[in-house]
Image (cartoon, rainbow over all chains, first blue to last red; front, side, top):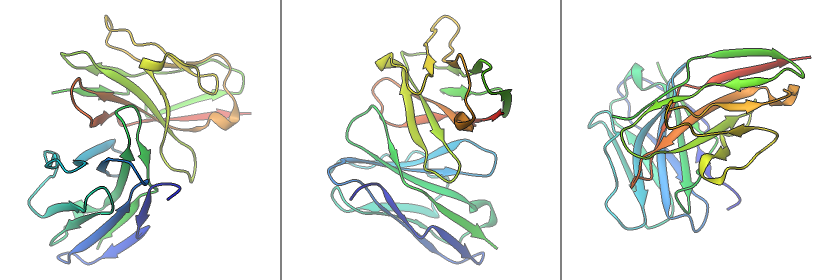
Length: 112
Length: 109
């Protein structure tokens, strides 16, 4: 596609429910990243996929968070049993090399 | 662990005035530094990277390893420069970026 596509753009969920966030990277981009941005904070790394290598999950804040990616295509970030502190903008980015990310427009998650 | 610090949450200047957005980092290795920008209602996008030594939209940034800084500068600010600016660091051998908390630049007419 023309850019990195994320869906939904906004999601309001009740505390304790599970949510799935989707990221469709630029075709051909082998690397895919998920970041979280809480209000007033910088971007916090969550997880990184590179081709068929094992993902770097070092940024996932708890075992309630998980992500998958099929080959070099779509990725889904799943948050189980959501908590209010999970409220944030979740950003996905993809890249072809190490020298610059292309970001999606993000999913704004609100846990009520 | 590596860290990126942007000491100013908000920087407000008048059109035509010089601008300097500060970025300091802590990292024991040899870093690569980036500036990303987010204009109102737009996506976060790469502005420039130190390895390219380029000037984009009149902005420049020089990596100062002695002072561990990568300040973003522009001699004459324009209203369209108003945006959120993030400094980011890439560690040697890694692909992920560590971001600062960002500085909001407001350029008034």
